[in-house]
Structure formats: C-alpha cells, structure tokens
Length: 264
Image (cartoon, rainbow, N blue to C red; front, side, top):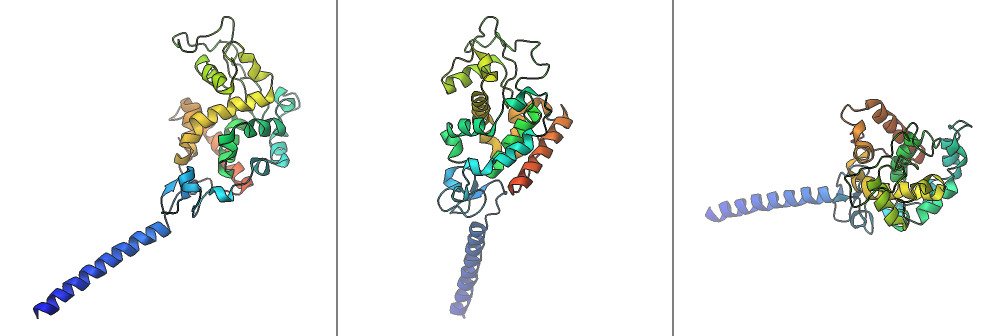
C-alpha cells in the first residue's frame, strides 16, 4: 500500500511538472507579442536585432524586411505631396530621392527599418509639415528659440533656431547635437536645414533615431510624447488624433498592423 501511495504521488508530481513544462513551451511557441514587436527564437518580445534577427518567429522580423526604397515608393511619396497646395514651398523642396539619400546615409536606419516604422515616421513628418507643404515652422519665426541657460550649445548671435525640416528641428539644444551628429556646425548655420532637402531629412532622421525609435516598441503613442509631448494629456487632443489618423492610414497602405497604445 505504501508503495502504491508513493507511486501515486510521484505520478501527480510528474503530471504537474509536465503540464507546467507544456504551458511554458506553449508560451515560448506562441509568445503573444504586440504586432509591433518581434517574437524571438526563445519566445521573448522585443524590437532589437536580438529579437528580430536570426530565429525571429513573428512580427517585423529583419529577414522579412524590405529595402527602404521598396517601402517608400514613388507612388507612396507622390500620394503624400500631391495633397500639398501648389503654393507650398515644400512641394518643390522635399523629394523621394532626398529622403532616400538621407536614409541610406543613416546605416543604422536602413539596416533595420520596417514598414511599421516608416508608417510611424511619415505620420509625424506629414502632420508636422502638412503633407510636406512647409520647410519651416508656420508662424514659428517670431522668436529665436534660444535657451540661454544651455551653455553646452550656446546660441550664435543673430541666429534663429525655430523649427525647420520634416520634424521641425527646434531650439539650440537640438541644433547643436544634431549638427555634431551630422558633421556640421548647425549652431552657426541653422539656416542650412531649410536650404537642402537631403540635410533636412537627415535632421529628421537624427531626431527620430535618438528620441522616437527607442520608444517605438511601446506603441505609436510613445513616439508622440517623444516628438511633441506638449500635445499629450489634454494639451492638444486634435493634434494627437490627427497624428494617429495619419499613422493608421500609412499602416493600411503599407499592409501592417498599427498595434496598440496609439494614444499618449
């Protein structure tokens, strides 16, 4: 009798262990990641190469990544800029070629970009510039956007650091490090951003890579906070709604799931 009792306990223990292992295996096999995250070979969710590279099971895996010029097609770009009125300076300034030139010069971007990231990025680009209508901020040149308290990136006399480019790079504390990253002195020559389309896109990519991409895995809403936090939490709900609408539209065009956490 004692032997039978011990055997029964052992079988219960063995069954419990097997069930737990099976459940863990099921979780690994079906890791249930958000559509904007990759399911790694080991069943964990993330967005870096460790998750989206070799062995990636689902999500925006690198192996299924299209080259950036296959995502941002001429038709995709034309459909955006055709919405801008003929009187817009940006209509004759921004081009698909200038974006691709800037993108290809940013290796970390082109080596890992996904369709979902393009949808998110262009949602901000086109909201901020009104479909690439504006090169510089509308009604944004009234001030010099100089933070005198920032001693690391001091303002040059007579220069304005108002919004320029597809993400409207603003303030001396952004122009300074952005210029360093691009090998240019944008503190002394901030106007360069509005004079060259490729450079304008490079500044947009610089800001995106440093502030927006790191939080993209949290959802589109996190990128709104990174780019325009003042619009969130009741600051400008209309702007948030417009960005989300743009994002959903581009996701639909590019055939990707927008994921969750769209609001900030």
